[in-house]
Length: 471
Ligand SMILES: *Cc1c(COP(=O)(O)O)cnc(C)c1O
Image (cartoon, rainbow, N blue to C red; front, side, top):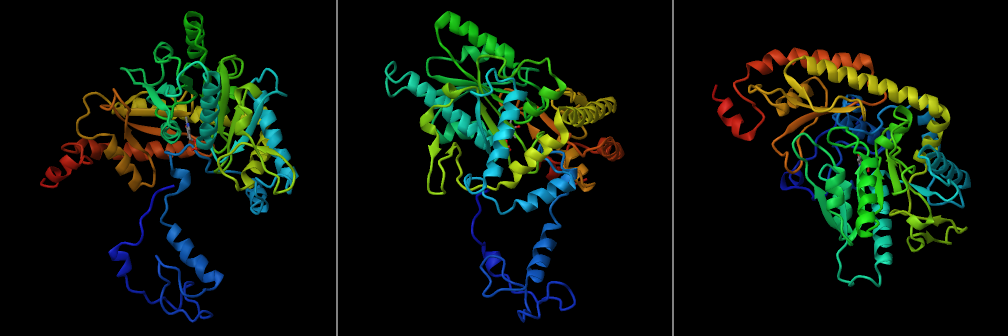
């Protein structure tokens, strides 16, 4: 999580403020006359009502999650899912023996995903829930690394440094994996209008120390699918030429819950023999509140047994593979609820509606003339766009800042190596971002454009702000 520092001088010198006796924060029971300190534990308790009021009031200043077009994470679920989750708040996912039904729901979810992702032998497929895709990717990366070191135990010197091949567009979790587990990151940079991993470039970076190739189904940067089948074919050819057998992990954080429903003919999953493991975020297009993810391995071979732990001090002897020990069980119950509630047809309908919104919004933004679309929302329901050639009065950072005035959280960012020159805006359409809301978004964007076009220059760049304020 964010690394925080202790209280600053300013925080420490802050005087206690009197509380308003006619507002909910006053606490006659605790005899409280001033507000509690912020950075040290208060001396004594206050009533739950008072505590609630303080925390509730402060949180009002957070953004509205439904207007957050930056996040992939679910911001709307049915009330029944909320009820179910609050009923399970006290259940610890690790206590498999104490909460056997929660453990069983987790097992069923894994089985359903194995089926959805075309595992050739579902009874051999193994998988687990995680806190999200990041943890799932750590686990998958560890399995790749262990397989590599096992395979090479007697062939290569112990000093050989493992590497992992990926596109420069990977989500930060892969850079974390490589840093935390001391694996060399081999990234294929972006090139011109290619914004994700290319099969030939991926194969070219592989050598005898490559633990695997990560293919992303649904790039975080622009919503495009990486060509998983082509990457596998290039690695098949590499094996034929050199004997190197490099497994593929598919990071399907978003796409593994989109493609099976909307692009059933796209072959990206366990149908490809080279795909050893797949992850997804249950809390993205799995349609569950944060935090739940899933990691699945094709078979026992893909997940070395020594990484799996069995503890007996909770009773029972259930094998687990996880970074955490304790974890909330509610999200797993909610995932099962959603699978049961929607079924294949329900998921298809939800994801199709979301993609329809993305495509139509992308098209309308493209038609404004001020922007150039990089993607069109027709793979992940996500698209990126930048200012059109010749637009010099404003840039994407201005658009992001001005849309915030209307409550929309629309991220602007620069692209990774070789295309750092390119800055984009990205819209992630999710369940609950309806056609109607998309319409309101477009109206707000359109209404800002006349002012933006009048700007003397982009105003959000530090180097421009000083000069702009002279006008
Ligand atoms: C979101 C995302 C992740 C990280 O997933 P979390 O569930 O947020 O931990 C990893 N890879 C890709 C491609 C993503 O989109």
